[in-house]
Image (cartoon, rainbow, N blue to C red; front, side, top):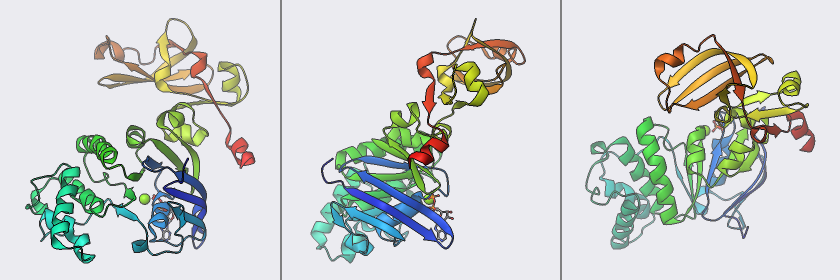
Length: 341
Ligand code: ADP
Ligand code: MG
């Protein structure tokens, strides 16, 4: 990697006895769409706030474009942040909202106008400049907030759960649009979310956070197909974990293994078990199966032919499950991970 846009080294933050961020090393490339994914309380926002300069690290350093900015104030960093609760000024028009930051920085009126209009067109809101925020939809308001950050032409844009307030349909639409906007403007995006679908859909790379540490960094398919820890396997998507005697019975050797629900199918022969639950979900059906080997697994099958009535009859019935050996992924145990660290 040439000089990374962001480099974090040994980054830590404690609040009293709470180690919110417990030592993070990370390099994010220029122009990358990078996501920080993890459950609530895993330290994502705190990392973002240290990159932005709102929070002083307890230890470690933050570099932006090769420059150590650890002790610099937010306004001295070439970074902008978009929060979930983006507060637009209600009494100002959309254009005035977008211009506001430039006005504060005494950018001349004409340049201000043209840059604000450019930012509005980047978020596909040309022609909306004279509206008031109250006359816009949730998704449009979120795009105004994005334009307000883009107008400053930062090197890096930090987004903290920016789509969290939107309903599912709108969120999925905005995920696609945000990704397109990022590609168009070519700015490095650091996107925080607790939603694994969102992270997998949008990102070039994902860091999975677990209790103030990064459990794994990789492309969406890396973290999904080859989870580095049981935690990652469980958090990113649904996973069936096979360990202990169950692993020996089903895989044939000791260890901890993960197998994704869509990699298992109901079959004529294979591992015997009993259907505990059938969950019809439109395009797919989920089966919860208690294998005779002593583990409960989830199976997902596409509904190409099956009808709802036939499915319901399967509950309580014996079945066989089959899968390909190459879809059984061995995961280093938590202990092996701790020993390696
Ligand atoms: P996330 O964004 O992943 O939900 P946060 O970074 O907000 O996680 O929080 C990480 C941990 O640090 C949590 O335990 C949280 O309660 C704690 N924390 C965050 N900010 C503060 C603060 N200002 N004072 C005390 N504890 C905090
Ligand atoms: Mg947060």
